[in-house]
Image 1 (tube, rainbow, N blue to C red):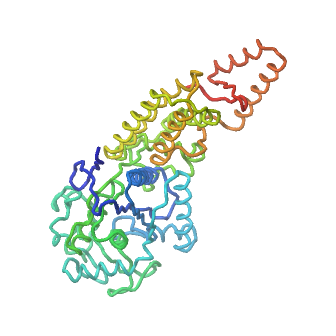
Image 2: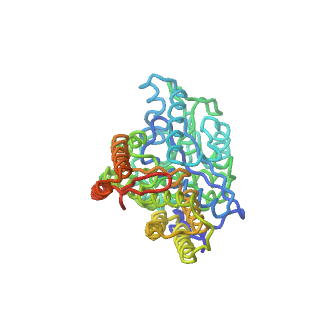
Image 3: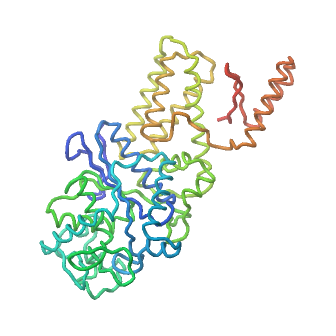
Length: 485
């Protein structure tokens, strides 16, 4: 089955055919580092992490670029208001670049905890000012931009395709989008490529138009083309960035180069709280560090992957609790397979088990080929695990080869592709230190009863734990416990 991707540009699922055979160039809009990342960031970067992982699983050599925005955007729109980084730096009494370093480290720390692979290149906007100035000069030369009062604006009416990504005409956009009045502009929807720095603005660079700083949209075009070429395969980002950010990227890039900019546009939907978008500006966000205080990072990752990347994800503590339970059920099967492998024998592999593995692998890959449908892929993993748990719990001896194939199934699909299964999977719910100590004490008491040949009391203790939902498993290496499925 061929891989199909929903392309925002065409509003259709399309068969994926990279520009260069066997190679994929992919760019995803990275964070503006002025605060700790929140669950909305996790939704985006976990989703695109799985895209990269799956493309590599399918044999593509992927160059993955994700920028770091260390030049503050303007809070009202791209042309007016306060610089977010400078504003936060004043509040925290830090130098802007000191603030950037602090929150960039926080971002990578949280992404590492979520098992998000590092991008191959993480370019910073401040390190690519010459490329951004060069792009502005090119647009001026082509008559696609104009200078006004030390700033430079893109003339949207001179680019015939403006609005094609969002699917709206100029007239519709002008009537539906709130734009701050700006007498320097020839047309309200014209956007800033370069802004003149006003007195007191710290982050500023010399340019042919005086001291200033790049507009919001410029950096992504300049950096993506610097590392992936004037046309590349996949550009990802949040659905809220379709307009104006990505629309403006398309316009300035294609106007400058007179060729298609991106072949497949991918947009993840948002995290909501009670149906309202989660975001810093609304004050309803939960930082990842706050979430990690209550839930393991793998639970958060699992929670995100239980929805399709193009679907909204509503955050509640109950939903994360349910995700913890679901992930634990999966990890129980994974751990049991690993434990059984240690004591398995070289028997003839069971064809029925191997057939089930292959059938569920096809289901999993079919879901991923259908626009990276991680929710359906997880369903395939769970469907297999229900059968695996029955086999593993039946007491029958299973061949080393069959167990090895089961372990590989989990490691490849759940680990390499989805990133939720690690070499030493950690169970997720309720195993705090006090509970662990209490159950271990009861296990030791039961073991002493058995050593004293008080079988009835030992069996009664086990029975009472079973009623409480705690299952004891006597194994050669000792008694272990888990919650019942």
